[in-house]
Image (cartoon, rainbow, N blue to C red; front, side, top):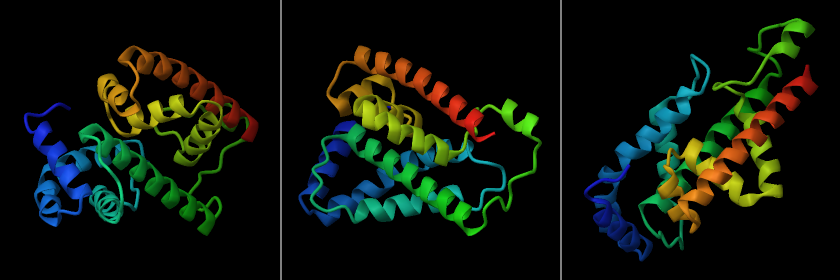
Length: 194
């Protein structure tokens, strides 16, 4: 994710933090492509025919980012880490609202045996994943944040380490343990619901 204009991007982020509206105008074209990539990454894990489109996710995240006040952007990785968190919340809120509108409306009927054998793979339910991440955050906030930045934000270990102010080795260790914990949590959660 390292680009030649990373220093310029960091300068523009800091200028925007200080209230420079012209910096925001210059920043938008530089970050839009990356925000769109993040959104595509998120949407790839969604079910086919999802009513929220990639561009709508980018636009919603952008609108929320523009309304952030009193944020001192540290650097590019910090900005995209926050962006990843916003996109996650937007998708989870969207999933929760759809679920509350009509319980089971588009959920296919399966037998108890089929349900107990189901395993939440790459297209795991975002609400269940969000709930698991909240549980993990209560036990180990840093590991939860590592998952958010790496899985949802698409940041590599070095960029995640920069945001969290830890070593890349620590990030890789946390990432490994968090993935194992989440896999177990989602498997147990899925088995309990069947």
